[in-house]
Image (cartoon, rainbow, N blue to C red):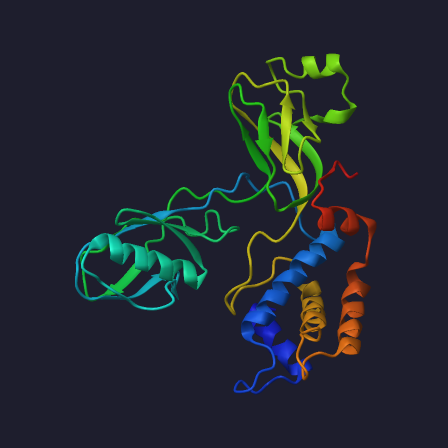
Length: 319
C-alpha cells in the first residue's frame, strides 16, 4: 500500500470520511503513520536490515540565485512537487527577495533552505541523500533572471563510513538501531569491538597507535566511536545494521519502507494514536488500546525495543 491508500483505510475504519468535518487532519494521520514505521523497527529491528547502503548520508544540494526587483515567483517544482508554500513577490532588492523565498521553502517542509546574500542553497529532508541528484528545480516566474543549478553530491545511506588519515573519531548514523558487524575495506576484514570502559590503561595506549585499523572502541557517547589503530591512509568501514526508515512518508504515492505484509499494522498504530487525541469526539481510550494491542500482536514489546529505541543506545554485533 502507498500512503494514500493507508490514509483511506484509516479514515474508513475510523468512519472519518467527510472531508468538510474531519476529526483528524491529514497531517496528523501522516505523522502517526510515520511514527508507526519507526516503532515497528524499534520493536522488531529485523524488519529493515542491510549492509548495502553507503554511509554518512550526504544530502544532494543545489543553488538558486535571485536577481531582479519585479514580478512573482509562482512555484518551484522538484520532481513534480511544488516546494514553496506560497508565491513570492520580488522586492526592491535581491537579498530581501531571497530571504523571503528561503522562508517559504522552509515552511513547506520538503527542503531545507539556507541563505548567503542572494544565493539560496537547497537540501532535501533527511533520508533523501542522493534522491535528487541531477534534477534541476523548475521555477515558474514572471521574472526570468532567477537561475538554478542541478542537485549534486548526494550520498545515500547508513552502512559505510569513510576513514581519513590520522582521524580517530567517527559518527554513526542516527538511523541505526543495531550493529551486527563491521568490516574493513575491500578485503572485508571483520573488526573487533570493545567498550572503552573495559580497557585498561595499556590497552588504551595501544589503541592510540597509528597503523592499519584493527577494531573499534565505543562507549564514549551514543553516536560515535574511535578506531583502533588510528588510520594512516584512506579506507572505509562497512556495517551490517538494523535501521529505522531512511525517509518520512509525505506524498500519497510514497510507499513505506517496511515490507508490505506489515503495512496494515501501520493502520492500527495510527488509530491507536488518533483515539488518544484530547477531543470530546475523538478521544476513546478503549478503542485506542484495542488498536495498540493489534499493532503489538505483530511486533511484540521485546527487550531490544525497550533498551535501544527508548534510550537511544547502540547495540553491537547482535548483542
